[in-house]
Image (tube, rainbow, N blue to C red; front, side):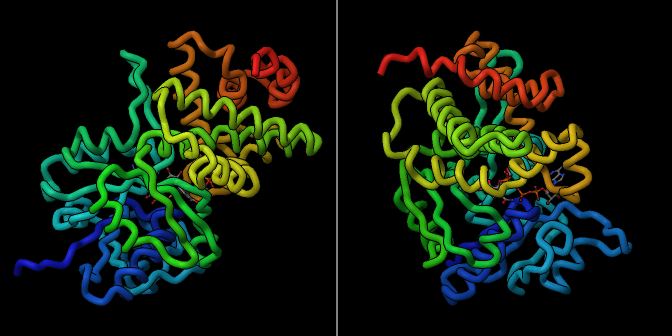
Length: 357
Ligand SMILES: NC(=O)c1ccc[n+]([C@@H]2O[C@H](COP(=O)([O-])OP(=O)(O)OC[C@H]3O[C@@H](n4cnc5c(N)ncnc54)[C@H](O)[C@@H]3O)[C@@H](O)[C@H]2O)c1
Ligand SMILES: O=P(O)(O)OC[C@H](O)CO
């Protein structure tokens, strides 16, 4: 039966995927009928330690016991292990998987979605083409592979806090008023406020880049650097983030860096994100980030090391590593090629101190 109700699908069900599923699930339930209440959430099937299937547990207990434990998800959110079944009738596809899986997932979705659907990416990360050294943003990959427009949503949104309804804001990148209105209906609430800008790509890049600087914040804390030094790391890191964005696109709305996707996400992530915590532990214990991810995150993904690698490759290709010493050193630390302390020693030589005002 044809329906005028719009359907939403989530591509992903990890820590953030489950939290935003809960948020959108409640919102569409409360909108009473404007949207199809059944929110399908693609969940890559796995068997839990006790032998049960994750999707069955989510649909029975209404909780993602592995990736967002102790938080109830509304009953209209349905975990669906079949990717194609989850998305085929969706008018709006919300992508929320770790960035390293975006290409393979989009390939599987080719020609399997509605032609007039649109996407919203919540994914923080990007790729660099090995041959051309061009940056490939998640929104661009979605648009190119699936032939649908893609908006971005980034901000200071630590998933567990969103699930607990702690106030937050986010920035939406959209150049289409109708799509913006739909996203506002689906996500904006008194505890989750949205602001809209046309800078889809810069918003997305900031979301990816802050994960690298948040790791440096963690290394600094683990090394017991002073507050002044830690503030300098964030300022210099933010400067590099902005300069990095300008390599991609010279013009943007100037205020964009002061939005939740910019300074606020950097602060939140550098106070308590997973990348920050993992990096702090690395500086304290000298363990590899891979081991720390395995020990502490139970299948969740640190996005910082992969993004540091991609950023390094991109800057190296452009012969600009000297202009971005924090991004350079972050990658070298992740790869255990230098000790975390080296990046602190390098701060005083930062090119920022040679820059004319
Ligand atoms: N967690 C947060 O607080 C938060 C907040 C904002 C944005 N984000 C961003 O959202 C994105 C998703 O993060 P998350 O926290 O939901 O994920 P996560 O870190 O919890 O990762 C686990 C998820 O990855 C999935 N996964 C594993 N292998 C996969 C594969 N081959 N293909 C597809 N999926 C696979 C697992 O099934 C699981 O659902 C990331 O880019 C992250 O940076 C996270
Ligand atoms: O926990 P992190 O480091 O992946 O960061 C989570 C979010 O991106 C914060 O906005």
